[in-house]
Length: 83
Image (cartoon, rainbow, N blue to C red):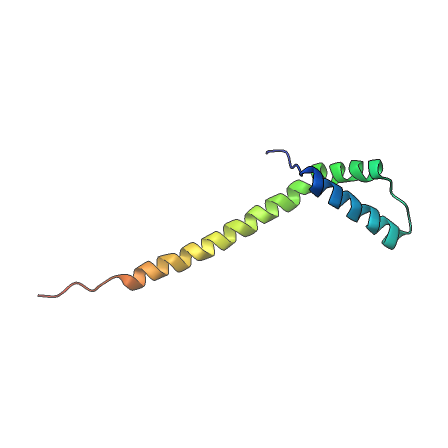
């Protein structure tokens, strides 16, 4: 599997959210470096589960649309003339 990576600005935004969460919900200060390490850990260890679930959801959505598409094609079929 390809490594999950974030652009610099995305990573900074996620780190800021982790720091805010620790501050607001846990009443703890989380420095930038520990927050980056936590993000790297979550990305490596837990991220693949979310990524794979996203793929499964996308596949299910695609299959649903393909069924709709197949039905639409079936409805376009014409009955041949008898005779």
